[in-house]
Length: 311
Image 1: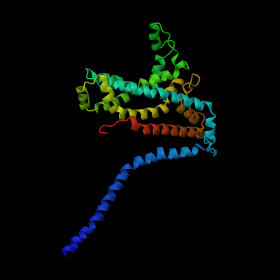
Image 2: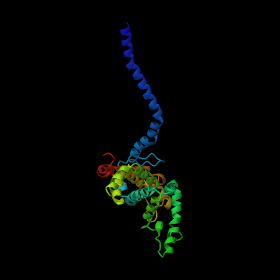
Image 3: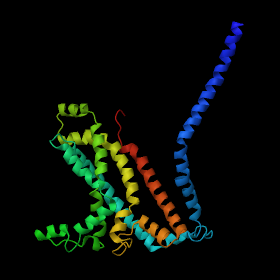
Image 4: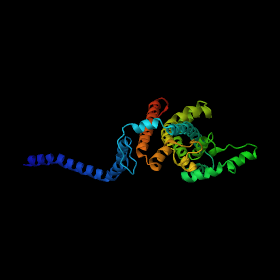
């Protein structure tokens, strides 16, 4: 009888374990359900819907008709579409490398053992707390061609300042300058990466007689490449989505001569000013393909230049 009772108890253990596992799974799914519902309602369903809209003439006010690839064909014959792509690529090509170079340089300076280091770090981080609209208004006054502070300082040393935002040749460089002023968040990430590099490497390099430049080249930069890789990807994605600064500076007009019409600005104008939502959806998916392709290229090449500790 004792053996039979023991056997019965053994048989009930797997069933009880499955029941507890099922309860844990249900509890976990219940806790995750708000996030899952949000993901479906605000990401998955809108994305799938926008694919369909990109093949229609949907305009918010009217359901539209299915037109196949007409929106995409029309985009490739739209000169302002190509102009917006050029402006966005121009900004990305110059801003992303400069932000990495200046961000790493600032992080290395802010990583030095000096008095008042926390104050300096706070000063360089403060611009990231300024809203984009306020930042645009501030720089509009600083770069005003007639009575702006920058041209005033240049005039004091005998240099005629450029027209900055009102000149086609200087509008995008001005925007790059404004954007570089707010790279404090990237600097903080670089500082975290520098703090993660073991001191043993620097001590070994110093014993071998390495100079500061040699230690930077052989130790700091290679071990900082994972952080540089992250900021490169995120910076590239953010640059292709540039919107608030140029839209505020030009009041949505992209002036002068559409030199400040960026891709997402033109997408917004088509979707919410002209109500060409199908056209805007097609633009959104072209942007998605471009960003995904560039990100894939960066990931594929990362094996050659990104170095992780212990590998």
